Image (cartoon, rainbow, N blue to C red; front, top):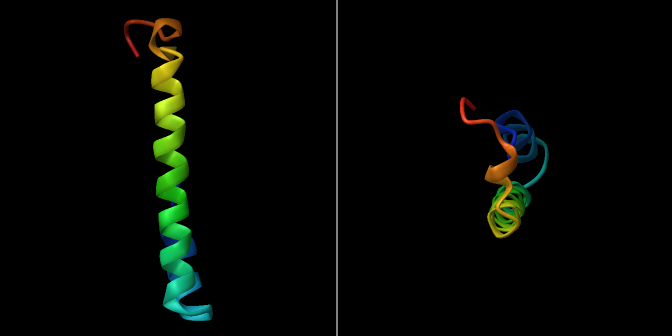
Length: 50
């Protein structure tokens, strides 16, 4: 999960490379979490109307 305000703060307070690292790490964790949820087939625990 990437927070856009945190990205802007990282760019302004630190160097842009740190902000890029933050974004890439957030995307990697989100992708890994999605893969884990897909592997465990978590959709069977979600109601049909969700």
